[in-house]
Length: 176
Image (cartoon, helix red, strand yellow):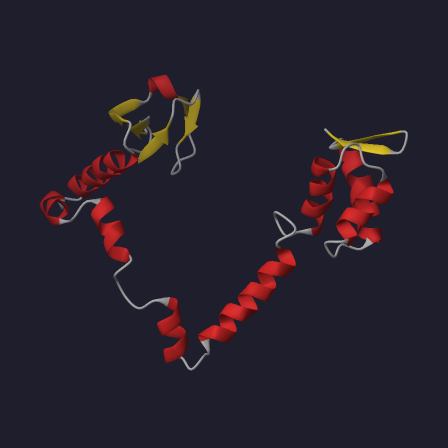
């Protein structure tokens, strides 16, 4: 469910998904209970909620007639694919070999495909998620296969342990 709601302090309009207990105004930062907010429309269709909010904003600026002449969000999104030139045409027009760019992107993707976030810390966290009660050596091996140095792994494990994100018992680590 999507609801178009208004802030009673600053008048901002926003779309809220679901039924959260509270929600915060993006403009003034005031937090209110969802039930107490003025709901202009509630719908299961996100595009419909976007249309209503956009229409209300246009009417506030006396541009309701101009807004009515526009296509729907869905139709405009479909038109985006046809607008302008694609990346390959742009690169070629700029004198850049698009095949070389694609090859470089593939090489970069292959280097970082083994980690979710691509960061060293994420690699250590991935080891803790994927390995069953690993010891330090197993985590170092896992991370080493993904290009993370052993010293970094040791430091990261110690920091995670001190922060209470990881526990260590009898040499085995567990993500909390």
